[in-house]
Amino acid sequence: MQAIRRRVFKSLFAASSSCSSYSLGAFRTLHIASQHSAGTPDRLFPLRFLITPWSAVQNRGAKVLGTDVRPGNVVQRKDRIYQVLKAQHTQHGRGGATIQVELRDVDSGNKITERFRTDEAIERVFVEEKSFTFLYTEGHSVMLMEPKTFEQIEVDKDLFGKAAAYLTDDMKVSLQFYDGKPMSASVPSRVTCTVAEAQDPMKGITATPQYKKVLLDNGLTVLVPAFIRSGDQIVINTIEDTYITRAKE
Image (cartoon, rainbow, N blue to C red; front, side, top):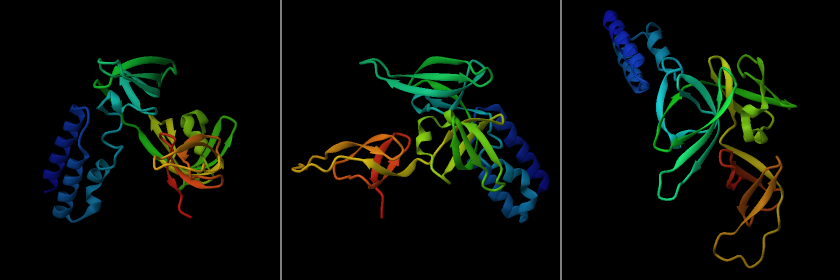
């Protein structure tokens, strides 16, 4: 039985090497089947290693459409690796939509601008993602701490982009690494912010939803329903900088 598992393992790994991506479901299925047959999880280390997201597939490409390209993604173009800095979608009347992206060469640091069709297949490179705790910001540097080892790491504030405004004490953030280098950073997709300034609700509001701009305690401005007042805590979508709901007291 052990010999059979070895042969299956080798064939699966060879298959993953010959294609751009491989379904992790197959590895999970093999892992479960092997557990039933072997009965000793410790003997299945290679299989348990494979089912972790960044083991067999790290640095292997996966085709994604242009519409799915986002800032912070790492893509491969003409045998070079780039990080997506900006992405702007444009609709050309009756013609097809395109996405203009600003890319930074991982090796040289040079920036280029390219335009993709939204239906064009782009080679996306998987990166390793790790969780950290935000400590403080000093100038253009952000200090983070690995929660298990308490090891501190200093990264450039630009890795967070506009999301750096949401950083608060002890916030859980994520760093994306490629080839051991931090490529981008992200905050939770939903955070609670306090409204610093807001106009009082206007009288005579109709049934049609009314919105107004408010200033948050982090300096950002967002649109919120008319009933929101100064001092209210609201939940914000940090990806789109949009109001979700009023926070529960």
